[in-house]
Length: 391
Image 1 (cartoon, rainbow, N blue to C red):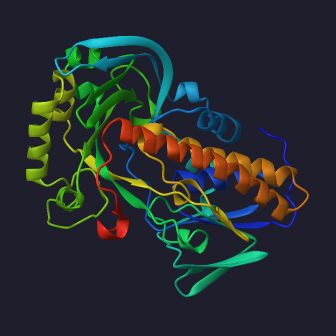
Image 2: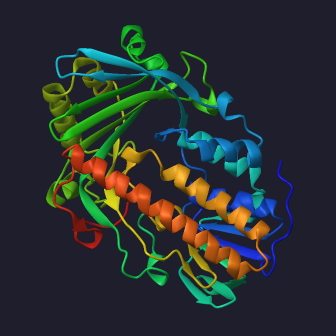
């Protein structure tokens, strides 16, 4: 573990949002000896059947240094990339990467952070920054802290306190996703994807897939999960249609597993059978509970308002093609950890942190937008307020 010293001028930290971005910061700043508390609006630990993530260096380093977790032991290696044509032909090239699941990272962070520092089912309703402090309001109670960190995701309720001009925008397409237990796949189909990161680039669409850890982070062959992502264009009315669940309830910008409407699922299967190469089509057919998210963009020109910081997707919302959302959040936390540890004053540390993270966030943001355009995916972009609320 790292040798640390207590930073000047800061002893208490309040974090808004208890997903990966908030947890990265909570774990790192607790390591500095700070009194850190996380407030998360949802209740309980989420289901460990969420999406896969390409393991990037900052996440791997964070898990090792702060959580004592060897990333090699909780990720699935791939040795090659394979590219499908519409007829099912394959081009293969060597490329080593590691794949991990959102749930594996989340579990490592939650297990590291002392349980009494994580408060779920407690939404922060308002924030009040001041030059040397901030106040978090939770219903009728208020908590004064030396530093408040906003980590409440792409549909952040508090981004405007730092960057009022930076509302999220819908990019004109969605990512359908699926996770399948390896044991539920026909052996011949599973064999097509072992040790491979697979891609199909079609007409204004992209499909990719790879294996990720299974239950409890297991990486043993036969006990993993297949993770796939399929990018499809959808205008605002179509987005409203596909994110309305089987009970007629609209979710706005996402749809969790198990809620897809029967007609939307039928339409997805029809699209798969008419547009995807056979192995990829079969993955969609074997997925019991597909889910989806709208692709959003947000770019800020500030990440700090006195003692109030934006981090992770609450700052820059970057497109999934970059494989950088978790990486960016981990790097935000690592940079803040080192800035506070080394600076002579908290304000100097926060200024240095903002400068570094603004540059990195802008670069990743631009990369994602460029990839979306090159793939022909970007459609009629629109303010999030005109296409629905966050799910």
